[in-house]
Structures are given as structure tokens and as C-alpha cells.
Image (cartoon, rainbow, N blue to C red):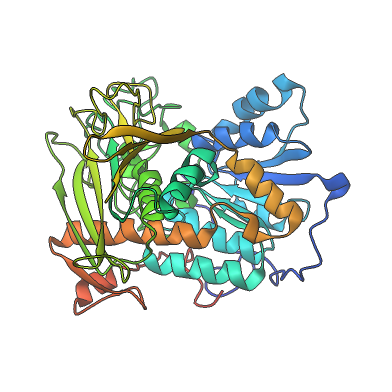
Amino acid sequence: MQRRNFIKTTTIGNMGIIAAPVILTGEGWKGANDRVNVAVIGIRGMGQSHIQSYQKLKNVEVAALCDVDENLFAERVKKHFTDKGLREPRVYSDMRRVFDDKSIDAVSIVTPNHWHALAGILAIQAGKHASIEKPSCHTVMEGKKLIEAAKKYGVVVQDGAEQRSNPCAQSAVKFMREGNLGEVYLAKGVCYKWRDSIGKYPDGYMQEGEKYASTLGSSSWIGPFTRSYMARVNYDMWLGPAPLRPFNRNRFHYNWQWYWDYGNGDMGNQGVHEMDIARWGLGVTIPERVSATGGHMMFDDDQETPNVLMAVFEFPDKNGGGDKKKIMQFEVRHWMTNPEGNHLGSGVELTNTYMTSSANVVGNIFYGSKGYLLKDVSSWQAFMGKERAPGASGKGEGNHYQNFIDAIRADDPSLLTAPVEEGFYSCALIHLANISYRLGRTLNIDTKTLSVINDDEAGRMLSKEYRKPYELPAKV
């Protein structure tokens, strides 16, 4: 496979891909006939949901697609555009060209995690509005840089915490903010998803005609990773800031989630949604203490991240009683588990799950001095008093994509239900918990600087090394 050069232009900072960055002047956004032209960067899995969601919005056009895997273009264009009678989008295998395209107003960044913040910063410097899939950063340091860029260039930058756009989540938080649950002292996020072993595979390409012996569970697969297939994949750019390693099919499509160089484990995959809602409902930002334990259980395979993880966060609470603290708990389980949170005998049916499957339980539980509250993706129910009697409830799903477009048209980032700053606080919890797990010790945090106290090793893990030329800009 031929390696492609990424930097051929004058640089901005260490990794420049455009000319002088555009700084918006606050004069308001104006598009042709009020149309917003969107480019989706990363079109294999979740990227297709972005394409379809934007296409449902009034006067929004998915004008361009970008992916390092050129094998995807023909099928995606046919499925999502020409078969629907829609105009064919421009296709790019290099996100630099998207940022150069002056007709593009906004981008959706749907790459692997290790690219999220860096691609977001580069898009922002190009004057593009950006919706960045969760988690919006791969480390604490690059999350700080992302926020700095968003503030400097004044564009709309949305985090992928889509539940914040749901009336369900909004009304649940409002219910707790108004004191109806009393002192909310504990919030729990659960992510119990059945995850099979990812197996082991050697480095290198598959042979022509070789079958893909998959034990990947929910992980779908596309294309044989043969030499001829991979000739149309810019693997060097896929690696981007990550260390240079030979191609391995088990570190590529989807399974990159379970490797530290690219993903953050299930806490940073599915769990980031519940992490965000737990933090939002509890009304906290940065913890004083973080402790996580867990492991990679049952399977002897290539996965690096834990498939069982229990994390506890302590937050200061000047208005609380007793110890004046709030606790947030988060759990990842990958195999057999109970449907935690269901209140038997209440007469209220609540699955507390994202997926309508007995194998998956995903949601939140909030505990207050007057009762507790269960929440799934589209509904919530409070149970009050010692009798745990059914109380108030709420439901409803919103449109995260419409919220992004509305904020662009108004040229007003404050309209976002999930601004990147809020996403960063939740991402920081993920990174701190993973660091605690990997080092096997509790972290004490300076809440003003978001740094680790008296632990240089942990402090270094708030950032990472970047492979040239895919480096985080020293200044945004």
C-alpha cells in the first residue's frame, strides 16, 4: 500500500491544511436561499445516520462526503442520493479538501475518536460550523484546545451528546433542579451491552477470497481487507495522530473502540451518553476525586480496554448536607446482567434501556432525599418516598441535527442544547476514569485547573504524543 503525503501546504501551527483561518465577524450566517450545505466526514457506520438525518431537514443539503475508504463512495452515493433522486454529493478522501471547499457551511465529524478534536479544530480554523461525534476529544488536553478554538473563531460547535436535545432529558433535569427529588446526592450511569470477544488476528492483509471468521457480535463488517481493497484506503490518514502500526483488521472498522490509541472503551462509546446525563442531572462539572477499577474479563483476545469497569467520582457540593459532596457512579458490563433500575410491583413499565433487547440495559438512576428517578433514552419516571410510589414522569425525543442547523442559521452558539464545553466536561470524566483504571489508583483533582495533584504519571496521561504531521496545534 502506498503511503500518501498529508502535508503539502503552508502550515498553521504544526498541522496546517488551509490558508489563513477565517474569523467570523458576527454579521450573521447567510447561505444561498437560506440553505445550509453540510459535509459528513466519516461515512461507514454512524456517518450514514448523519447523512439521513440532515436529509430530512428543510433546506439542508448534504453536499459532500469524505472518508479515507474510497471503496465506500459508490454504494453510499447510490443508497443515500441517486436512488432517492437527490443530487450527487462531492466526494473527498482527504478532509483538507472539505475544509478548502468554500461552499460547505458545516461539517459533521464522524471519524474514530482519536481524530475528533483534531479534525474539529481544523474545521473551526477553516470557518466551518462543526458537529463532533461523542466523545468530542480523545484526551483532556485536546478537549481544552477544542474549546479554545470554538471560542476564538465564533462558529457553532456541537457535541454529540444528543440526549440533551430530547424533551425527556430536559424535563427530567428540570424536575430535579426544581427540588422535586430533594437533595440529589447520587447519580448512576449504566452501560450493560452484550459484547462478544473480538478474537485475535495477525497483522497484514487478508488473502483474496479469504472469509472473515467473525466473532464480533454487534460489529458489522464491510469489504475484504485484501491488498486490492486496501489500495483504496488511506490507512496513514486513518491512523492520523496515532502511532504508526501495521494494518490489522481487528484494529480497523468498529473494533478500534477497544484500543487505547483510537478509542476509549465502552465508557467512551455508548457510556458517554449516560455519563453526560448523570453529570448534567447531578449539576456538577469537575470532580475532586476519581477512582476506577475493572478488567478485561472472560476473553483471551486483542481487546485492550476493560469490558467490566466501575468508576466513582466525588464532587464538591457547598449546598449539600453531611459531607457536602455529590457522588457519581458509572458501570460498564459486557455480558450477563440484571435489568437494573426496574421497580418491581410499582405497576409502572420502564425498560431503562436504549435498546429494546434483554441483552442491553442502558440508562440512568438518580437518588434524592425525597425519592429516586429512572431514565432511559426517551422516558423517565420518579418514585417517591419510603413507599416508592410512582410520581412525576416525562418523555419525548428531540432532533439534535435540527438544533445544530437552527444555531447556524441564527449565528448563535448559545442556542445549542449540547455545546462543546458541556461535552468536554463529560469527556474529562471518561479520561480521568480510564487513567485511574490504567494506573490502578485514585486520582485527586485540582478542580480549578483540571490537573492531577501530586501524580506526574497521571498528569502526563491527560495528553498524548502526536505522530507527525498530525499534531495538535500549539496555538489555535
